[in-house]
Length: 154
Ligand code: INI
Image 1 (cartoon, rainbow, N blue to C red):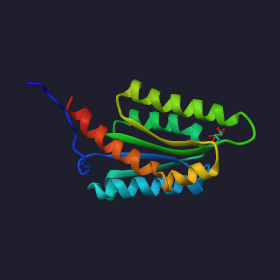
Image 2 (cartoon, protein in one colour; image 1 turned 90 degrees about the horizontal axis):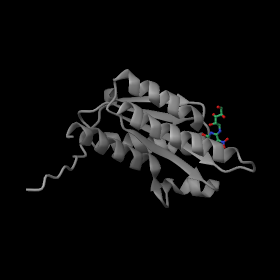
Image 3 (spheres, rainbow, N blue to C red; image 1 turned 30 degrees about the vertical axis):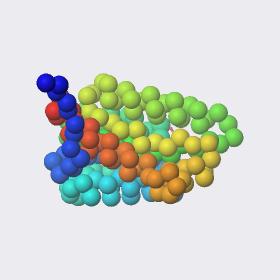
């Protein structure tokens, strides 16, 4: 018989850390609210959730790495908003944060979910922070719950 593994979406037995950047806080605050709401609606209590604010998206990876190394968390939710400006800075920030968060997963075995919106315009970011395109923070939290439960079954 084929063995199939599907994780439950119950959040009542895991510890979550949310790393959220202050840069573009008018967007990241909405992502954070979406993530907390999602965790709570899936059964997480306040004491299971730790929120860590960092200056910008670039600082997310190092912080996530330290949290993963602490062994205190079953999943990390990384939230940020990178919005293109008039220079190439955006590209460097996107590159660093996407690579860095990915690396945390592979190096530590702790799922670090990429909930960073990378947008060409402010409108695109707003659409992903609780309007037309949903809430990237909510989606990230849902993935965190699934991955925390899934990895325990493998
Ligand atoms: N940080 C962001 O989170 N989003 C951005 O859009 C952004 N842009 O475009 O500059 C940004 N820059 C700051 C960066 O993440 C670091 O905090 C800063 O470079 C200090 O290391």
